[in-house]
Length: 222
Image 1 (tube, helix red, strand yellow):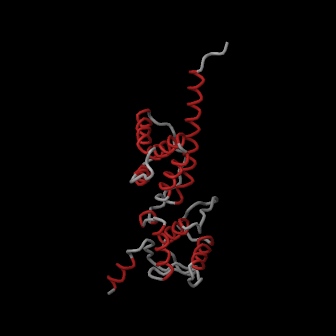
Image 2 (spheres, rainbow, N blue to C red):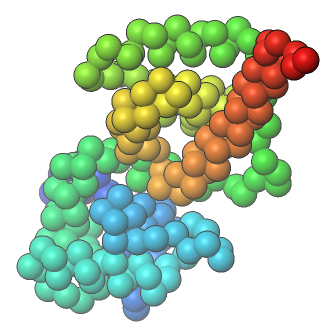
Image 3 (cartoon, rainbow, N blue to C red):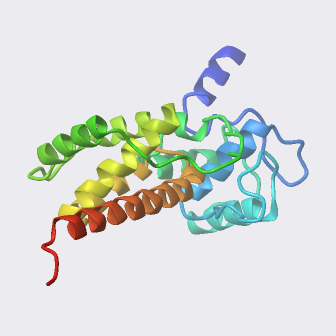
């Protein structure tokens, strides 16, 4: 019976190991999952001062209590692995397309410097061909999943992702925003600021290059 019960508990999205409460000793993995889950539900904002951590904070419990209030649950800031709050949160997360893998992703160490935004010409050209194939489509198929996988692999993949979205934005901002939104739904909340920062830096680099090419190609003034 113990094995069956724990199997049932571990088939949700949160998959908490222990009870989450202000007075309980908390598992680090449970804290990360809870913060990410609440963030996906717009009930937790990662603090700028210290970022996402494995340690509970007042904002996490405030978000948890707000979720309980919104869903007609007992407002006690407490979540058991197989309790009503966890079940309701699983349902809410599922409706938003949040996966268990996203919630359980390991905490990434902070970077010591910015990711370089330069790319080779072949990769830029490859992204251009992808954009060509996506411009007349109303749905993107598995492209958001491919972008999320590339983002999670290495720094070069991160730059490729923002370049592809940027190339699309130069042709159709609304289409690009739709693809970007679908991609952001698949990555950890703590990466969203990094996506936006990298996107802006890559765009600035391309804008500078385009302006330089324009000046080079324009006829000299007499």
